[in-house]
Amino acid sequence: MRLWQVCFQCAGGWYQVCLCGADRQASREQIRWKAAVHGEVKATILYVKVCLRNPSREVELDGPMKVGEILVALHVNPESVIVIRDDELLTKEMAVADADSIELRPVISGGGV
Amino acid sequence: MKCRVCRGQAVIDIRRHNAAFCREHFFEHVQSQVKRSIKTFGMLAPDDKILVAVSGGKDSLALWDILLSLDYKADGLYIGLGIGEYSNFSQEKAEVFATSRGAHLHVVNMKDSYGYDIPQGAVSARRAPCGTCGLSKRYVMNQQACKAGYEVIATGHNLDDEVATLFGNVLHWNLDALSRQRPVLPTEHGFVKKIKPLVRLGEREMAAYCVLRGIDYIVEECPMSEGNTGIRYKEALNEIENASPGTKHQFFFGFLDRGLDHFSEQAGVSAPELKSCSNCGASTTGEICAFCRLRQMATDPERVTVGSPSFRPRRRH
Ligand code: SF4
Ligand SMILES: [Zn+2]
Ligand SMILES: [Zn+2]
Image (cartoon, rainbow over the protein chains, first blue to last red):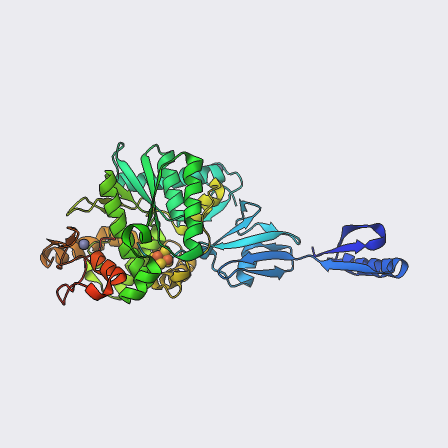
C-alpha cells in the first residue's frame, strides 16, 4: 500500500489516502476534486524510509516490502546488518509499510587489538 | 519466523545454527555460548578478578554486560586513544554503561599517561593507525591489569574478528601469528592471562544483543579504520557466509581442532629467546620492546633507541 499524506488546508489537518491498486485512481480524483473546490492542496507521498550508516544517508522505497526484499533491493548482505524499527529488531520475512522508518545498522567493526 | 525454543515470534535468525530466537531465548543463547567458551577453553575460575577492555563499542559493552549477568567480578578499562570526537563519544558510552550497571570503570588517557595519542603515534612511527593503536592498547591493558592486580583480561573479540584475523594470517602465511591464535593466552612472561569469551558469537549477534538489552554503544566507525584490511576481509567472508552459512564457524573452530597444534609445534622449535626490555622490563625479543620504541618515536623522535636490525616484536593477540 502506498499512502499519500494529504493536507487540505481548508480542512485544517492532515489525513492519509491510500493510493494502491484501484484506490489509487479514485484517490487522485478525490484530491483533484478537493483542489478544485477548495483551492490549494498539499500532498506528500509516503514511502518506507531506510536509514543507512557509514556514511549516514536515507533511501526511500515504495512499500509495503519485506525486510528481505529491501536488503536485496539495496544490495545489502544480510550477514552485515541488523534491521531496526523503533528499537525492535526485524527478521527478513517481516513486512515494512509506507510511512515506516527502519534502520539498517552495519555490524562490522574493524581494527585490531 | 518462529523461536526455536518456544515457537513465539522470533527477533533474530542465526543461519549458521539454522535457528531463530525470541528475545528471551536469544539472551539464553548468548549466555550459553559464552558459558560454553569459558568452560571449553578453561577461561575463568568463579572468583577471578577480571578486567574487561572496553571501547564503547558493541562487543566490549556486551561482553561486560554478559560477564556481570553471569556474576563474575568484572571491572572495565577504557583507554582514551585521542581520536577526536570518536574518542569522546566512545568514552561517554562506556561511562554511561558503567554507571547504569553500578560497575567500576578505569579510564586511562594515552596522551596524559604515556605522552602521545594514536593519531600522533601513527604519524611519528610511520605505522598504520590500527597497528599503532593495537600495539598501544595491548601494552596498556597488560600494564594496567598488572598494576591493579587483575588476574584476567577479557576482550570483546567475536567470531568474525577471529575469522578475519585467521583469514589474514593464512593469506600471508604468518606462521608465528597462526601458532598463537587462540581464545585463551595463559599468564606467562609477565603477560596477564587474556581471554576472548565471545568467540562463539558473531558480530551480528552482538549488535542485536546490545539493541535488545538497551545498551547504547558507539555505532559510528572509528575514523582511522578507513582502508583497514580486517574490514575488507570481513566483508569478503560475509559474502561466503551468506552463500554457505556456517563457513566462518567451521573455518575457525576447524583451525583450533585440526590446525593450531601443527603451527604451535613448528613455532616451539624456532621460538626466539625472550629478554627484558631495557626500558620497561617487559618481555621482548629485542633490546627494547615494541611499545617503548613506539613511545620514544612519538614523544622524543630525536632520541630513538634502535634495537637489533632484525627486531620483530612478538605479538600476543
Ligand atoms: S579502528 Fe584502528 S585506530 Fe580506530 S580504534 Fe580500532 S584499532 Fe584503533
Ligand atoms: Zn522463545
Ligand atoms: Zn618496554
